[in-house]
Length: 302
Image 1 (cartoon, rainbow, N blue to C red):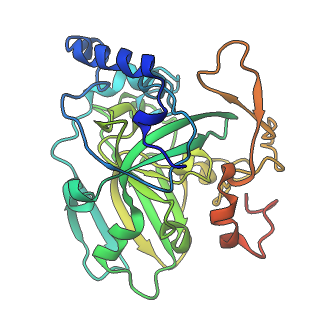
Image 2 (image 1 turned 120 degrees about the vertical axis):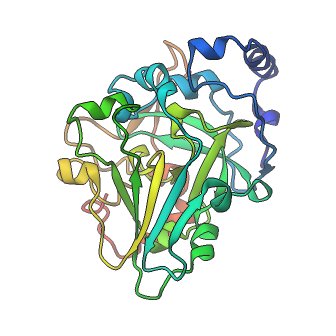
């Protein structure tokens, strides 16, 4: 049985979150965390029936180096980011290149709720109720040309608002990419919200990629450019350290990171004595995506 987030979130947490949101002034102390607007998105049969993490856990434990390297830095610093107006440039091997607003790519009447597992390459995990649209629907709008084989994504560069970009932590802008068949897969979405809220700044506002069977760093945030290419694009982490971060980055418990095991994961919100759980191949989405990699040596193309 596939459930909506309100069905699977414990009632106490649901009520507590409503009280928190009603506090209003708390938004000043936690920039980017709470928005007044709510979103009605239809539930998707592709959602997991696992209980999502709380809104507070999801928005206060993040990797978003544009706002700092600590897990709490994005929530602390992302309030400075201006997300309206916002446009995404679509370029390369497409029939209708141009600058598109978020509302053009993900109109309100097309939004779906996708409750997905998220597995970080750092061996922690959570469950997030994203709101968004299939990336395939966006690519259909712009018309993918037959020679296109890959999709490249690029994050905003605005160091005056993204304090982490004031240091050469990474080679800005952050870039990621997918093979075209991965991008067109029904599980791959462009997300513009979580729970019933517009996307918080620290989670990648106003629009980000979500690819649930890959390690989290593949799901690039705050996208300003989508480029269709014939050749494999350069990815930030692979460019920085190819021996540790591959292009495919599929969740694979049998292939360890050079500096730690990927066999198990720490579940955010499980508590001090929650222990670790075994990591599933493709983050548990193997039935849907394993065929994409038939014939590939996953120990190399992880």
